[in-house]
Image 1 (cartoon, rainbow, N blue to C red):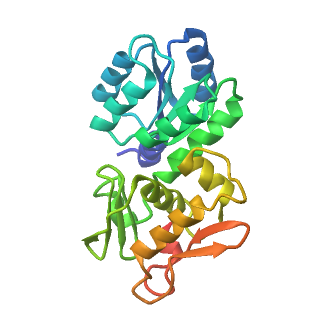
Image 2 (spheres, helix red, strand yellow):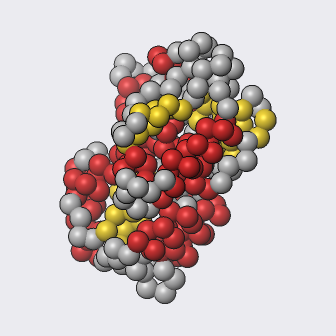
Length: 255
């Protein structure tokens, strides 16, 4: 093997593949030019069925999906995507309706952005969503790219199952999304505003206790670490932190 071959292969694996499903041909061209210049591989489909065919026939790391598609709309296509794949999906639409955002998130979208938007904002959201799917345990990454492990917790993004010490923990959809969001930035504060947008699909209102109630229920279901330390800490007025265990898995090993 020639010197540098391994580096070249690794760089090739690191390049992320974006699939855009949108009937706006001009927008697809603009997105293609932009993301290609950003170092992504890019493909597009102008109908939902064509997008599903491309997803089934090849590798895809993230999908940008328009809601307003001809024929079957983006919500229907998202349901079909979730039947065959756990690939991250960002919904793209001209609608700013709160109900539409919630519907998309409940069906299984990972984020939601409304037209018009800036390319930089969309790129930032793409990278943020991709980071959520980073496996925290290097040992598990060879087994399944859909599994997040931290100490005694195992979270399967594809089957949407959570286990503590091998035992299943039944979570609601909101609780699952809360845990997924927190595990995407273990050891760092995630604001109430960001959690509310990502998980509940709406901006945070200071007098709305629903987010705190969901977090409280999640904390109770997960329980403490085996060492007795808490998993989720509340930073009053700021947000929440999913902390590293005091014993066992270290931060260096987890990231």
